[in-house]
Amino acid sequence: MLNVDLSRVPEYYHRYINKVTQKDLVPALEEHVLSTHSFFSSIPEEKWDYRYAEGKWSIRDILQHLMDAERIFGFRALAFARQDKTHIPGFDENAYAEVSEASRRSKADLLEEWQLVTRSHLKLFQSFSETQLESEGIANEASIYVRGIGFIFCGHALHHMGVVRERYLV
Image (tube, rainbow, N blue to C red; front, side, top):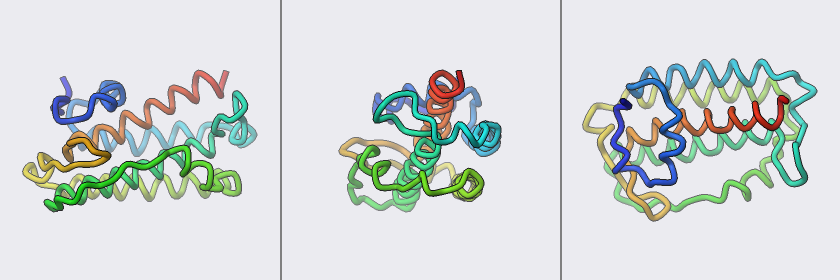
């Protein structure tokens, strides 16, 4: 059983968290850093611009989306761990993707940035005390807590890797 209280996370994110197999957060984040990088590294360069349907994201767009989302959720985790009571707004992932210009970036550049972003968040979560991991705040008009956000990182990436396997690499 995962060491996360789903009652403290909006229901929408349960589908991500339930994909995580590691019980504890830090091992889950360590696996997240390595397995996600390994997965995207293994995808041939010629697949990175493929879109399985009109209006769908390319693999470049998906990795950029994962980084954007992780940065936003990382800020939320930091703010709540530091007892910031500011209500943090949501974000429109499609609007971000539309202007990210991921298509102009190389596979190597995106993968290098992914490593930096995920390793940075791993160190951030390793630095949190139990009290900080249990801190909560309001983001996108819903209550959420820091430990839950860490598990969302992992499950969100697992979700998108599943989509890539099913729709891009067949």
